[in-house]
Image 1 (cartoon, rainbow, N blue to C red):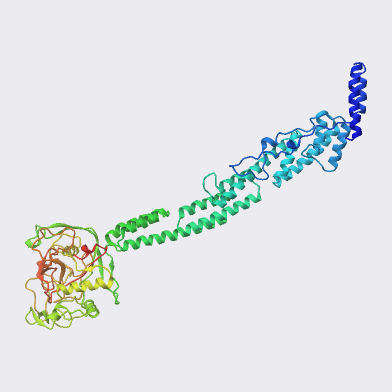
Image 2 (image 1 turned 90 degrees about the horizontal axis):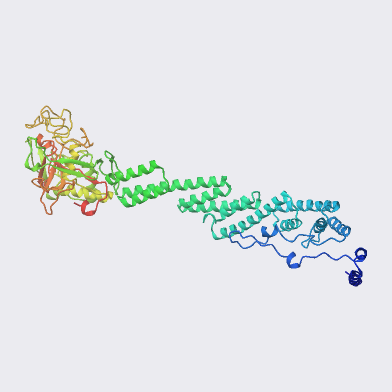
Length: 640
């Protein structure tokens, strides 16, 4: 307002007061003159504090306010334009039209086209030109508002929305756009929190406050956001990488949790499926490796380690069939290590070649000693008692051969008792008797002639047999030894309780090298005491494994040659061990010999028959076979 206009306005106001004093009659005329001459006063303006005040930012999970945040409670209210009176409608309309033409659709102080038209309509709701202009401005602003919402330009859209609300625009579309802006603002806050979570490593935990949960909620608020989709792709990739890293560290529980999070990020993808295949491959590989660790521990009789490895396999989610197999293998390994009953095996020798063929015998129990109804039992075979084998063991399939014993001699330079003393006891075909013969040793057969490689070695003492077993243990690393007397009888019986392993009387087939009524020496001699109506075709030891095996798969266990066992001789079984171990007394001189030989009386072929010889005894009738522990035993047990 100019100075002259100000002075004129003051004069007119003074004139008003004067006219009021003159009288009410002239009041209408004076008022009419006043309205024609008085300059227009400016409409009341919002204060800068009111117009420029920023709306309060909504709090989303206590995140720091983002630059574009606003408070719906504030933006949906505010000062309404046009609260003052419009004195000159035409002038106000002209100004509004010009602002519309210039594109100045609104200003925060309500002086834009929107505010001008709104002022006119507040004073004159039915003014057609003002309504037309107002609608045109609202249409343009709604179009701009929709564009800002689509482009997610929250701050610009908020200013338009607040202006339209101050202008009291009532339109469902405006309400929807306001909701859209509010959702975008909340989404922006969640994104900011998610970025902080990612930096802190809170990708999937804690539940409800992780980067994944926040981005998923943000996606619900802004489902079409490309930026959000990119963030979820990035989060999925992070989760996949961490899942694969966890799988490489064999933490499959964490790997599966992370992969499940990756699958939630976008509802699954080829990348997640490929990672799942990789993790499954890692898991299968780990299951296989851990199963092998369990089996290795079983082989070494480290059963606690085997149990721990099986539990690891279980925790890796192995299939029930594999777990059942491992549990059964562990049960059997406690009994047989890696072997199974009836299995044949031989161990490699450090110096080359293989040791004797061994047969795995089952664990179990049997009655040791003579049956009370056996007519030829003696006090040495009583009392019959139960022996329980808590574990399986292995026994040589047949007696140690000349060839096998030769390998031991050549490897060690060992000198047998017969070689050291210069004699043994051999069979004389001329006399039909066994007598002392010089320069006879393991190299010779029962008759003193050179022995064939596949014959059972004879002319060996108890010490010689033990030396061979110790050498096998050193060469193979396994617990080779002479069998105990209980083990020998258990093996000989083959699971039966009859007098002989084939029954109670004369065998009907050639089962063992025994004294048969039909046997004949090279000089046409025959046995005076023999199994009636029996012949096996041999006079003297037969090559090993030429006849029948007993039910446990053992050859020559009752005949061919007698065999040394580890026990000291005792006159009866009173106080005999019940666990199958050898019964040994320190310094004992007499050792037990089991089984019969090619010229022994039929009664000595009985399963319970036993004899005691001095440890240095050797001759044409005595050989041996070896036993081997399958499960590693404490040294004090293994060395008994």
